[in-house]
Length: 238
Image 1 (cartoon, rainbow, N blue to C red):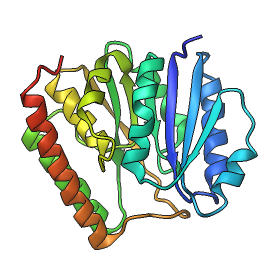
Image 2: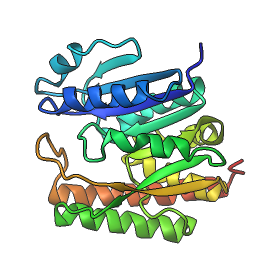
Image 3: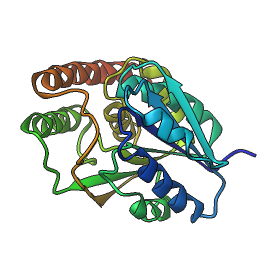
């Protein structure tokens, strides 16, 4: 049976919390009363993340373990398959910074929308990450216009029929494909619903890119976003 919903979660070195985070999500998703699959992609974790995931047994849970490629390429390894197989695709990160308990609110908002995305409230963190967030927000606004405040938020529900055409336009090695997908939603005139979501700073786990490396990565992402906008300009996004 074709699932109504596929949840995509990339994970890297989150052994301290991944068991709790995944079990929280399974409990919330079970409560929706819909057919779903929960796909966790272990991106070459070097801690005990893989072991913790093996301990969780649930018929809707699929764990895929690969060599380390990075957050963006890990998403792009799963997005095309998920969009082809389910009516809705939801992406969330594995650190528990945005709790599973509020997902039913986003799920309820899907009626009349193609894209339901969270806007993180009271987000703190290192100056480099705050600067990256503001920079990508500025690039997104400049290239695609207003309509999404937190374009890289990893708490997004996407109607597959609306987003599937974008898959052939986004390279597999894209650093921040979620930014491009937000831009695509604006460019294609999709129905966007943005809802505030709480943000709980992480206390454990690994931030794989820090400080100046993060700023360089932001530059790469900005260039990829410009290139994507140019590519969209040559095609009808519909």
